[in-house]
Image 1 (cartoon, rainbow, N blue to C red):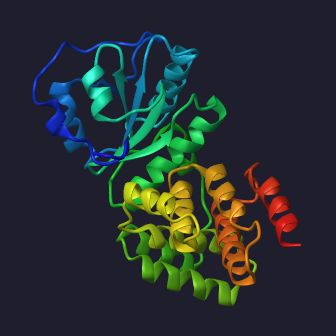
Image 2: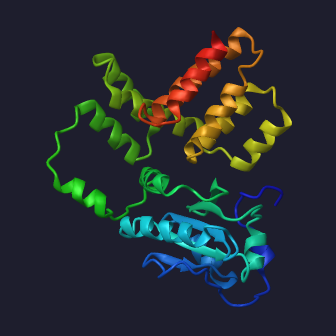
Length: 299
């Protein structure tokens, strides 16, 4: 494979080597599995039923033990809705090589047999819960039936106001994988209630999912690298970054397109950024600076 984040190449792992290693960071999570060459194929198969965060790390990584401990706490709080798989790059060198990891630590998502990058550095603990919520939500939107975590269970016990019929219709459409129907329901809701923030965010999120449906991350990144002036190629990578939780990368890629751009490009990039701002939410600390930079570049 030429890209580090394509589907795992099991052909590179035909010959077994060594046993599993462990990176010390306290007690393993109850929802954690060590990764070995022999167990890698089963790990991929299991990802059809449960989303798996795949951490490639080493005892040599500064803050690595604290990072692993934070991930374990986050996974435990989800009560089995996702799991953590840990690759010790020192003892499982062939696995790390097959994953084409470029630096340690690297965190990836294994979902339905597909591998997607999340971050190749230590993720701040304050961002871990949000990441895991996002992973669980994406998995559920793809049809996985997952248990509720501790926080979700507490929320479920609280009485909730019934959803407006069109929002309920949109959620049902998402659950059955009909993104077109979800978009139509959200648009109808906004026709009736133009200021409905939940409908705006929902519409932007579903349209993001629809734009990236079936997209190959490796191919998209290569196309964008080969054609830096190709607006559609750059916007697709920004969408994929957003879907993968790389919010700042998505914003930066689009904002960089505005330097010296013609009016048509500016309009397209502005529209896409406003959609992604809705996906991130007004409370996201990255949205404010990006909005300010957008205004400076446009005006």
